[in-house]
Length: 132
Image (cartoon, rainbow, N blue to C red; front, side, top):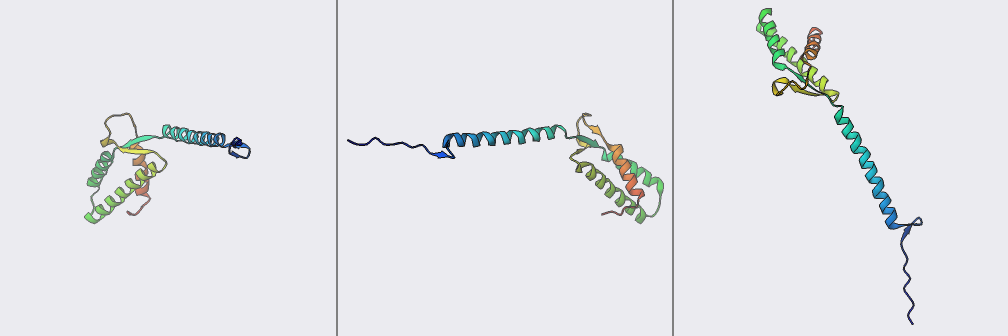
Protein backbone atom coordinates (compact mmCIF):
# COMPACT_ATOMS: atom_id res chain seq x y z
CA UNK A 1 0.00 0.00 0.00
CA UNK A 2 1.00 3.50 -0.69
CA UNK A 3 1.78 5.81 2.14
CA UNK A 4 -0.51 8.85 2.47
CA UNK A 5 1.10 12.13 1.43
CA UNK A 6 2.07 14.29 4.34
CA UNK A 7 1.12 17.90 3.78
CA UNK A 8 3.18 20.44 5.55
CA UNK A 9 2.10 24.01 5.70
CA UNK A 10 4.71 26.68 5.39
CA UNK A 11 5.36 28.85 8.39
CA UNK A 12 7.36 31.92 9.25
CA UNK A 13 8.53 31.95 12.85
CA UNK A 14 5.81 29.45 13.69
CA UNK A 15 3.03 31.48 12.05
CA UNK A 16 1.23 30.34 8.87
CA UNK A 17 2.35 32.27 5.79
CA UNK A 18 -1.17 33.48 5.00
CA UNK A 19 -1.54 34.96 8.48
CA UNK A 20 1.83 36.73 8.19
CA UNK A 21 0.92 38.18 4.78
CA UNK A 22 -2.46 39.28 6.09
CA UNK A 23 -0.72 41.02 9.01
CA UNK A 24 1.67 42.83 6.65
CA UNK A 25 -1.24 44.03 4.50
CA UNK A 26 -3.09 45.24 7.62
CA UNK A 27 -0.05 47.17 8.89
CA UNK A 28 0.49 48.74 5.44
CA UNK A 29 -3.18 49.80 5.33
CA UNK A 30 -2.92 51.38 8.78
CA UNK A 31 0.22 53.31 7.81
CA UNK A 32 -1.41 54.54 4.60
CA UNK A 33 -4.55 55.59 6.50
CA UNK A 34 -2.47 57.59 9.00
CA UNK A 35 -0.58 59.31 6.17
CA UNK A 36 -3.79 60.13 4.24
CA UNK A 37 -5.46 61.53 7.37
CA UNK A 38 -2.46 63.76 8.10
CA UNK A 39 -2.40 65.01 4.50
CA UNK A 40 -6.11 65.87 4.59
CA UNK A 41 -5.79 67.70 7.91
CA UNK A 42 -2.91 69.77 6.49
CA UNK A 43 -5.05 70.72 3.49
CA UNK A 44 -7.81 71.96 5.79
CA UNK A 45 -5.39 74.37 7.50
CA UNK A 46 -4.20 76.02 4.29
CA UNK A 47 -5.01 79.68 3.83
CA UNK A 48 -6.06 81.33 0.60
CA UNK A 49 -5.68 85.11 0.35
CA UNK A 50 -5.92 87.66 -2.44
CA UNK A 51 -3.81 90.66 -3.35
CA UNK A 52 -4.90 93.46 -5.68
CA UNK A 53 -1.80 94.12 -7.73
CA UNK A 54 -3.60 96.58 -10.00
CA UNK A 55 -4.50 98.76 -7.00
CA UNK A 56 -0.91 98.67 -5.75
CA UNK A 57 0.47 99.63 -9.16
CA UNK A 58 -2.17 102.35 -9.66
CA UNK A 59 -1.25 103.93 -6.33
CA UNK A 60 2.46 103.77 -7.18
CA UNK A 61 1.95 105.30 -10.63
CA UNK A 62 -0.12 108.13 -9.14
CA UNK A 63 2.52 108.82 -6.50
CA UNK A 64 5.30 108.65 -9.09
CA UNK A 65 3.47 111.13 -11.34
CA UNK A 66 3.30 113.62 -8.45
CA UNK A 67 6.91 112.97 -7.44
CA UNK A 68 8.57 114.20 -10.58
CA UNK A 69 12.24 113.55 -11.17
CA UNK A 70 14.28 112.34 -14.09
CA UNK A 71 13.24 109.37 -16.22
CA UNK A 72 16.25 107.41 -14.91
CA UNK A 73 15.22 107.99 -11.28
CA UNK A 74 11.64 107.04 -12.09
CA UNK A 75 12.77 103.84 -13.85
CA UNK A 76 14.98 102.92 -10.87
CA UNK A 77 12.16 103.56 -8.38
CA UNK A 78 9.73 101.56 -10.52
CA UNK A 79 12.12 98.59 -10.75
CA UNK A 80 12.70 98.72 -6.99
CA UNK A 81 8.96 98.90 -6.31
CA UNK A 82 8.13 95.97 -8.61
CA UNK A 83 10.92 93.87 -7.11
CA UNK A 84 9.58 94.65 -3.64
CA UNK A 85 6.08 93.57 -4.72
CA UNK A 86 7.44 90.28 -6.08
CA UNK A 87 9.37 89.60 -2.89
CA UNK A 88 6.44 90.48 -0.61
CA UNK A 89 4.05 88.18 -2.47
CA UNK A 90 6.64 85.39 -2.58
CA UNK A 91 7.31 85.73 1.15
CA UNK A 92 3.58 85.60 1.85
CA UNK A 93 3.28 82.38 -0.18
CA UNK A 94 6.37 80.75 1.33
CA UNK A 95 4.52 79.65 4.46
CA UNK A 96 2.03 77.55 2.53
CA UNK A 97 -0.45 80.38 1.94
CA UNK A 98 -1.97 80.42 -1.53
CA UNK A 99 -1.90 83.98 -2.89
CA UNK A 100 -4.40 84.83 -5.62
CA UNK A 101 -4.35 87.98 -7.66
CA UNK A 102 -7.73 89.53 -6.83
CA UNK A 103 -8.31 90.43 -10.46
CA UNK A 104 -8.41 86.68 -11.08
CA UNK A 105 -10.87 85.86 -8.27
CA UNK A 106 -14.58 85.87 -8.89
CA UNK A 107 -15.89 86.55 -5.43
CA UNK A 108 -14.99 87.94 -2.06
CA UNK A 109 -14.69 84.53 -0.42
CA UNK A 110 -10.95 84.92 0.20
CA UNK A 111 -9.20 87.29 2.57
CA UNK A 112 -7.78 90.43 0.93
CA UNK A 113 -4.15 90.99 2.00
CA UNK A 114 -3.37 93.95 -0.29
CA UNK A 115 -2.69 96.28 2.64
CA UNK A 116 -0.24 93.76 4.13
CA UNK A 117 1.66 93.60 0.83
CA UNK A 118 1.55 97.41 0.57
CA UNK A 119 3.10 97.72 4.04
CA UNK A 120 5.84 95.22 3.22
CA UNK A 121 6.60 96.94 -0.09
CA UNK A 122 6.72 100.37 1.54
CA UNK A 123 9.08 99.07 4.20
CA UNK A 124 11.33 97.44 1.59
CA UNK A 125 11.39 100.51 -0.68
CA UNK A 126 12.16 102.80 2.25
CA UNK A 127 14.98 100.47 3.28
CA UNK A 128 16.51 101.05 -0.15
CA UNK A 129 16.49 97.51 -1.51
CA UNK A 130 17.95 97.22 -4.99
CA UNK A 131 15.92 95.52 -7.74
CA UNK A 132 16.91 91.99 -8.65
